[in-house]
Length: 231
Image (cartoon, rainbow, N blue to C red; front, top):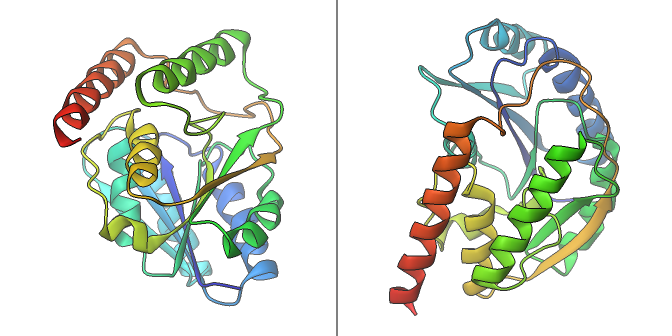
């Protein structure tokens, strides 16, 4: 099995972060021999950072990356990706909505693909979030062509070498879409796999905030403009 960096962004997830990291370490130990867990604390106002620091003392594979202020989902992912040192990168969220053992479905597909993108089957979020997600995926497909059926699913596995060959400008919610768009344009192969999804157990999602939505649309249309001139 390849060496693996697991990257998790976290913002005000003190009720989720300890069980999530513990579960992730246990899952990775059962699947790979060489791994690290990178948690990016994106300016949390609660005890998320302190809890991760404590987990790092218990599990030597766990590393904390700190943002002094909240910079956005994409910025947290970018910091985590740039901190990764292993051959492959596994992305997931810190909200405990995924069954981490589903990583076992993705790893075999990495033998013939550069990116393995999970899709939530089915998505266990409130109806409005599901509809917003469907609309966002439809808009990205309309503007850029088909990338994946669940663009923002936070359960992806990819070869870290990709980061050396594509430029990522988005730092908000458009980050995942830009990653897939630029990787596909660069010729990297994307395959998909279903993954289990659970309702959020604790904490609050922030993706529906108005400022987050406005920033996402601004970044998306800026990306479309830039790619027209890159073609």
